[in-house]
Image (cartoon, rainbow, N blue to C red; front, side, top):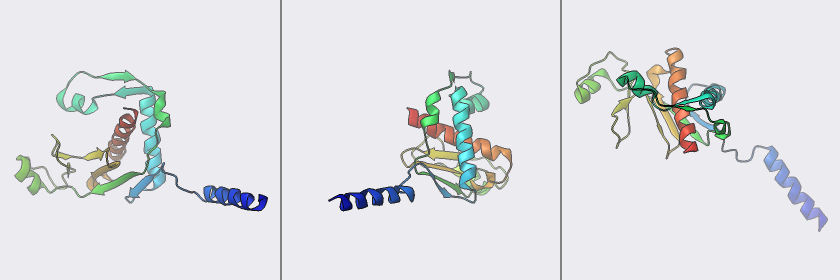
Length: 163
C-alpha cells in the first residue's frame, strides 16, 4: 500500500518539476524574445502601480482633460495568461485612402481593427475575449515608440483583468 502511494507522490512531483501547465506566459508569434515581452509587462505593471491614466490617447488626440486614478498594487498579481502577441502587416496607403480619404506614406503603421468597433484602423489593438495583442509590424523595429505602444496594450490587459 505504501509503495503505490509513494510512486504516485513522486510522479506528481516529477510532473510539476518538469513544468506542468503554466498558463502565465506569452504565446509569442513574433521575432521578439519572451524576455522582451516580460520586461514590457513588468513596465506596464510598474506604471499602473503608481498611477492609472484612463484616457492617454484621447488627451493626446482630442485635447480632453486627464482622467487619472491613483496606482493600484493589485496590478502585480495580474499575469499574462496565455497572452498571444503577434504582428500584422500594415494596410497600404492606397487601401487607407480608399477607406478613409487619408493617404499617408507607406508603411502606414496602421492595421485593420476587427469589427464591430468604432475604430477602423490602429497602430495596435487588444482583444480581451481572445487574450490577444496585435500591432503593426512596421512599428516593430522603429525605435522606442514600439515599446510604448506594446506597453500601452499590456496596461489595457492588466486593467481589463482588474475590472
